[in-house]
Length: 259
Image (cartoon, rainbow, N blue to C red; front, side):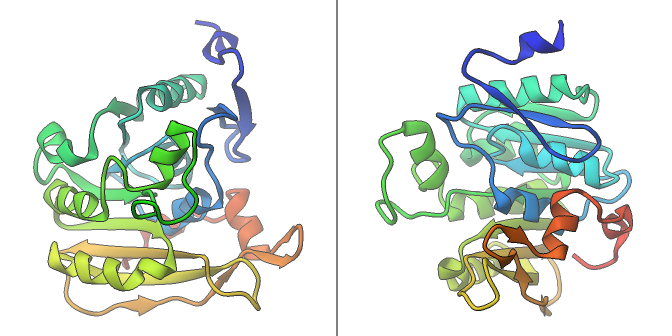
């Protein structure tokens, strides 16, 4: 199939600025943001490991992780059929069918679908909002992506704990206002928090994202990383975010011994 046929009417191709990869997105549906990009550089997938992304949307995490890490294989699970279809077409567009699988399915049934202790790494950029918290959106696809309508934090952590191998690693980006709940529930499901980094839009503003890493069955001890500042000033990324955004970070990051 010619590449052009993979992009449907109303969709666009966005340049991921790494390894020549592009992603198919639709302006009327949920499009990836900085949170996914930052998470992709926080995650470590080592040589020979398999990673699963829960709620993959249009497949941004598996595609970026394939570009940035040395894992053997990457899988994305997505409940919305239209998003999963776009993700599969993006995988095909980039010629990554042998490295990435996109599966349509429910996070709440992930362990049944993939089996217990089947992955070394689980990642997720989940819906941040509880119920009506935040501004509800009349667009159903956007509402599902942003609010805990079809799955909750408990669903994600419960299934991740089942899916991960012992000492497997869990990575998530979320909102700081839910951090106490996140840490308590990670421990309750046997995923020990090991690493955290707060993300600030500007140096003088409050953080609006948090990157959290944990290990299934890990020992208690958490490292809090330095603040990650996104903008130096309005419209200008900091040098660190430029390195992350353009994929300039070395793959040695994927071989580290920490989370």
